[in-house]
Length: 319
Ligand code: BMA
Image (cartoon, rainbow, N blue to C red; front, top):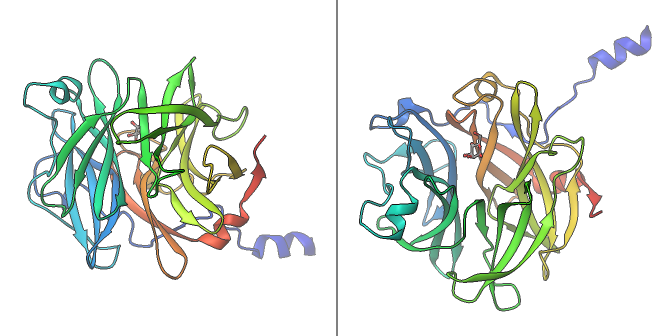
């Protein structure tokens, strides 16, 4: 009896990521133009500001990108008009963006902010790349994969002299995380599978890189999403994995448990229930990681984790 009392007093934190008490940080109330939802935002530091590139689903059901700026990483103002819409100039981009542009990720290399995103059309999702130097003008570079591919994230440094990206092709019915390399950011190859779904786990159905790879001591930290097919529908959770610095096709350690799972009402109920899905994280000087995530495809939230604490949960070596 005494033992039970002691146990019930103990406070157990179910998630490694601590939700900000002001969540959600952005909802459609904050978007100055008509839309259905706002979710899955890429993030970057630019000058003295935090930038979020928001995926906003318009009233037709197609997604566009809008820009939000803030000083503290928690409070943001959204610009009046989207900064990128599906391409309407005849050509490749128009064909392959007919159903929208989704889930951007930002990586800065030598002062250029590259935006890897998903172009969606009746051919299926594929990866596209755009760039900006000032978050005012945005230029498309190229379509950079075949369908079906999503969740492209560019490494912030070249690996052995070549650009590198993680992505998530669906191949042989499996949705795993792969790596590819490029000399010019346009033509990609040398593809290898980096990590696979895990039977009977929270990430047993699909996985994909979420935030852009972050340089940490001895390697790369990647926040990824894992999906389990439950009888009520998919459940999207977040995990973490570390990759070898010189050869990021090698997994060093992976979390056995999710670091964030849908628990709050705004993560449980929305356009798509039971989803936490990240497209970006920022590592602060004090080792705190700010992870921006879409909740139930309906709003945007932020959570934090100390990187050293997070690393303690990366316990499973590569099988
Ligand atoms: C994934 C992506 C995300 C979305 C998630 C849950 O396949 O399309 O944009 O948040 O599904 O619906």
